[in-house]
Image (cartoon, rainbow, N blue to C red; front, side, top):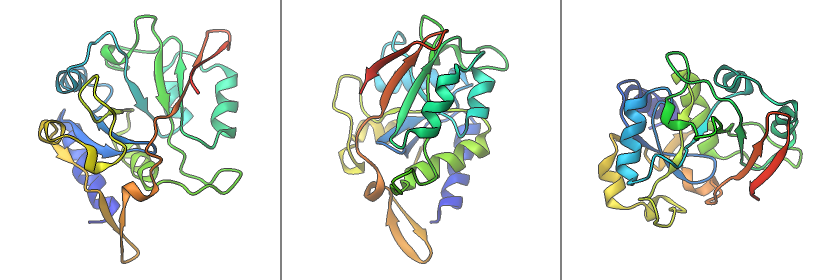
Amino acid sequence: MDIPSIVSEALAVLKRGGLILYPTDTIWGIGCDATNEAAVQKVFELKRRSEAKSLVLLADSLDMVARYVRKIPSIAIDLVEVNDAPMTIVYPDAVTGAYGLAPSTVAEDGSVGIRIPRVTPGPDDKPVSAGAVFCNKLIFKLRAPLVSTSANISGEPSPENFKQISKEILDGVDYVVPNSFLEGGRNLRFDDSASGRSSQIIKLGPGGEVEIIRP
């Protein structure tokens, strides 16, 4: 299958409130429509994870982030533009409700962690991961952020590649994105271009204060 066909199948599952297992720009993740509270609850149930732990979301652009965060600190724009490594930014004052995010994706202090997978080469021409390209295309079609939580039971190690994902996770989702895909007549694997490591996490305060949560 090629990426457009895989995106189409995953999108159909997301739109009906299902869960997908998919490659990101970092590691394999469990995902759902981040505006669908019932779907988000399924993620917590599958991972056996406390709702007190907020979830990381993926967006395709700062324009999308701006629809779900009341104010984007100016420093966030600089961070997104200059950083060439996967980076999750925790924004203050998330928007929830009928036209916002599912309440369970937001932390108790009203903040929400969102990452924009990089789909253009950085200043050092660092290659773009196939997972980032896939996520960007899927999120663009979904027209909403995508939940991105590691594909493991809470408390267990995060899988660095597809082979490390447990049967319980594989059986617990509604759609598993194939690890290999066709591009230009070649069979490529998502794992070959993924970092296999979690992203940086930087938290921003209402006044632009910066706190490094995970280097």
